[in-house]
Length: 186
Image (cartoon, rainbow, N blue to C red; front, top):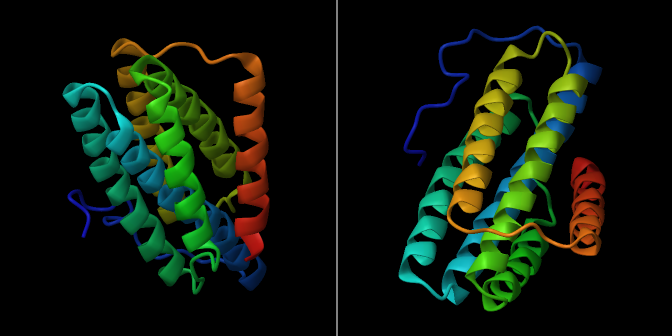
């Protein structure tokens, strides 16, 4: 159950053609899978965090990501879509990645959060561009998620996150691309 109401709560229904509805559902499935991965990343990083303050920050961010997860799942249902069949894989892999980032040390872990959220903000921008114009409900959810993700990244940087080396950032983009392309369909 989300702590905050969905940003789409006050908006009326939308009139989407079947093709538009399927496309919007595919995009929202990707976003839902991303939130499954975010839950796991934050939990994995929290387990391995060195400082209690970093562990608490990871838990707070995971709780906020839970809102996103619930909003995306509800919107998927409204669109007649389903969640990714690979969610258990996304969760397990992301938990391991989060734990490894946490074991690298708090500054690296926080840098990983900052970079992850920077990439997620860009990904959400792309999805906002690709959504059907008439899909105001999905658009409202993604805009709020984009604001929240930017805030998570800024907090991680302020808490001491370092800029990750470019090969690490590139590997993160590659794994994210693999997940998004797969989750759209499966």
